[in-house]
Amino acid sequence: MEILQQRSTTAQVWQAAEEFIRLFHRENAGAGDPRARLAAVRAELADTGTYVHTPAELVHGARVAWRNSNRCIGRLYWNSLRVRDRRGLTDADAIAAECFDHLREATNGGRVRPTITVFAPETPDRPGPVIWSEQLVRYAGYGDHPSITVGDARNAPLTEALLQLGWSGGAGTPFDLLPLVVQGVDDKPRWFDTPADAVLEVPIDHPDGDGWADWGLRWHAVPAISNMCLEIGGIHYPAAPFNGWYMGTEIGARNLADTDRYNLLPAVARRLGLDTSSDRSLWKDRALVELNRAVLHSFDRAGVTIADHHSESRRFLSHMEREERKGREVGADWSWIVPPISGSATPVFHRTYEDRPSNTAYVHHSGARERAQGRDLV
Ligand code: ARG
Image 1 (cartoon, rainbow, N blue to C red):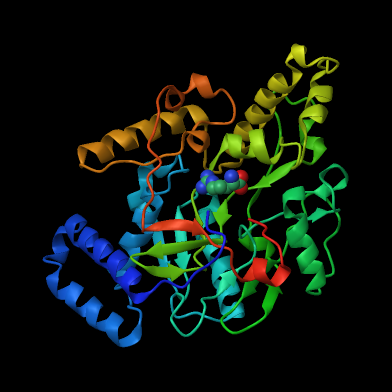
Image 2: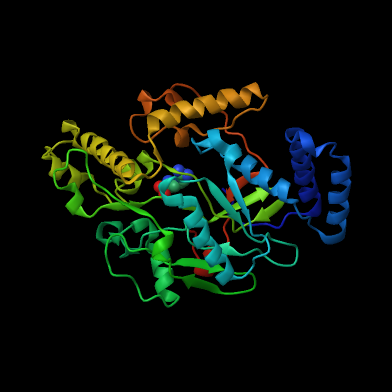
């Protein structure tokens, strides 16, 4: 993970650009011989210090960046990513409005569509816009320590930053939607209330009932990462929110279960009447399974796309086979690919992977948000 964001030299940009343009022409039969395009890019770079992707290059680049995401188990459908080209936008208010439209289109009434919106790139004379929020949809965390926080402790620093920016706070429930924080080019960060119609949420119930519905647990339908920089052939797009659909364990085994997030396993165990006096009763393990059943059941009942870790693991192995048949090596990070519960019951557990770096990728940068707050939140 990068700590310091460094401007690349023209030579570095050229090297990455050449590699990407060659790949684009290799993988898109209709694009023909790359020589003319390479010469044009080289001239544009010499002239302006940067170059502009064609719409087709942008689409392919965003998809290949997904294909190269070593931590993502859901890459089988990389080539169907929908790309919204909004490279003309540099101002916070226009960007926020497009982010909300992104959510509406990606949500698609529950049939979630993998989508990315690409805003203005960084150029030699100015930084690009950035979205401070880690995802387009985040729940507030009130309090400065996980054990006393109401809501999602992961978002306590963002909540605090919002309050400092003048947001007056939400209702104080565990699931208050945070406004989106966007910093336009040459501007200060600004916040925008998330319109209710842009966010689909799923109330969490359990297939066996038992009063879970009255508990008030919920999660949002679309995970849209908004603080990673899309890098394509040497060009940086720091504001490029993208989403796939959820895999149940992300919510049931991490967001709602981690001790520094919602920490719900003790409450689930109490509800199930489990003996929590000893680790060896495996109450945490049993609570995890029931919480994950509840998440999958609730999304299914609400008609919202969600994957389970068994099918998604099999799909990932099909992805690897398909890529290898095409002569491409698949990079992967075992510690991210293996699901956080029942790892050994899925086929992705029983093998190793190469963690391959790539020039066309989604990357964490230490950007304007961290500089402004004087701390690294990523
Ligand atoms: N793990 C993150 C979350 O729980 C989302 C990361 C991206 N996940 C995805 N299925 N595309 O919100």
